[in-house]
Length: 213
Image (cartoon, rainbow, N blue to C red):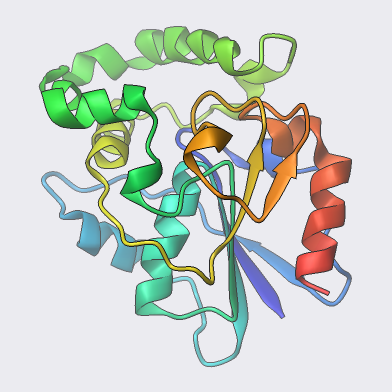
């Protein structure tokens, strides 16, 4: 059984590289695509879904923003199971910070230049707030295309979605990006910041092996 995986906003798969899956599962990573100018979110999701072979059963797993994407993909190509790590199941679970962006439309008016390579480095350093003790923080956020970063921030703030009760949600209890208090996750990783798939990989691997057994 294939597990198609989408990582987090601006992140490559290093944040997930230490996770262990059941031996009967084949892991397939779906790389982030750079959105086309003025591309509708639905069209982008369709392009992300092209790599998935829906002629046979498969699983979907998404981390952070990737969790939003796999839930959208699931509407086009239904999976046997959908698992999200450090992500939300509906717009009702957004943090106050993200909701503020949605209401004020600030992400839309921030110039693309703010997300250029130099700013992207600053952005990555700021993300140390999510896990200040992790010395590898800068290694996880490598997708630095400025248009992609601006577009992604906009889409997270604008995202509207009705909860699918079949989606399996795993959150860290110290995640300030998607606070556990706003959700009713199936699993909670103790001591887990937003980077818990990397820092608590043994606990997460145990959960994933239980889910995909």
